[in-house]
Image (cartoon, rainbow, N blue to C red; front, top):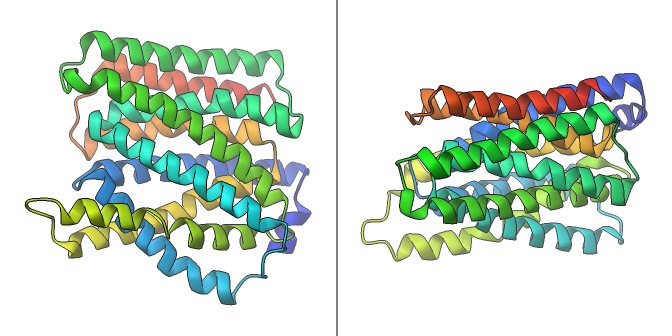
Length: 300
């Protein structure tokens, strides 16, 4: 399968596959965000997910994929540090604000930084129409942030902090998207990067989550938490794997922007599953973010 994927790099078929993978990653990432924000404390949910990431990825890394080349070890170390910071920032944001407030800002801020990173690292450039799409996307993001600051009645005391962490998280989304795209292109077999990365990443946050769980007056039962963690790990494998393969097959900037159609899925999940009140104005702004991503694709 690795040889087949590599053969599609830079081709029209590879572009179409990358498009499908980016949209799939968008839907799965919205599901993943809802899992982390949902029933349990975001830190505990993320820790449970990482336990399963390590458990499931380790046999794949050790027995199913080629051993990483020597030059990959510093790339793995850097990627893990970036992702640990990203996960901590995201957990802070979800602790301070509602899912439908935090998620669009996180996912919408990331593409702007990712486009800049793709230009600097991969020499990718956007057409005038694509930059117009980025402008539409950003207008939806900042419009949503301003609307929340003015009108939202839930978590008013922590809303500015939640938005601050959301923007920082978006910056690290762009950072890991760009850096991981570089790393997955640096190895001969893309599945080598994915398997070993998940194994290393799964080693970190469970210790932080366990300390938080142990200090709680009434800690949640580990069974349901680990069950949610298993579901989250499977979603994470699929979502992150899809977007990383998309960045290897086609342009990093376009894949990063297309993934942000996830805000539409997030709005639906927030209303239908998490029972959060969104309202027509906020839904319209979220759709504006997704429309900007579509314009970027059409202008390419």
